Image 1 (spheres, rainbow, N blue to C red):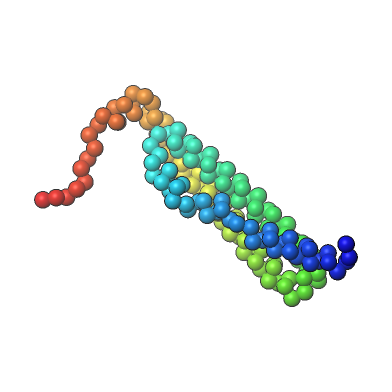
Image 2: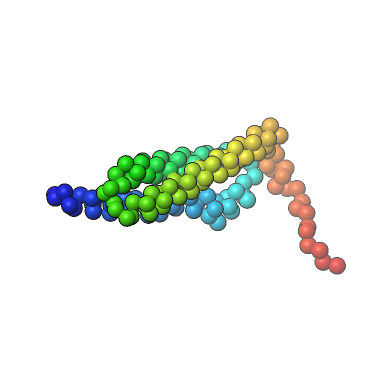
Length: 146
């Protein structure tokens, strides 16, 4: 490998890494997850959501750290990228910030569901007797037909 092709290869790899899909970030606001949140009724459901949001936050932190390392590389070796160095630095910094914000949001949601789960567990929701009683209770009719 020649010394001229090395910066090109590094640039291409960095470009591919910085353009990686953010599917976990997008998953925070996905319809499937929002539907799961809406359908959570028992404390076990909320504990499962807590775990899911914590896993998502951990993945976002990992991705933010990858972007931070890439940003450090761009700052230390900016002479390898010429005019593109500043663009790569700003793009990588923006991705890093986005991942960090997603991790914070996910941890906030995990804390909320943990509180809800603790309250429901304390009140006895999710036990068989309470679920059976809740299933047989009449549902209120919110239709306003006169």
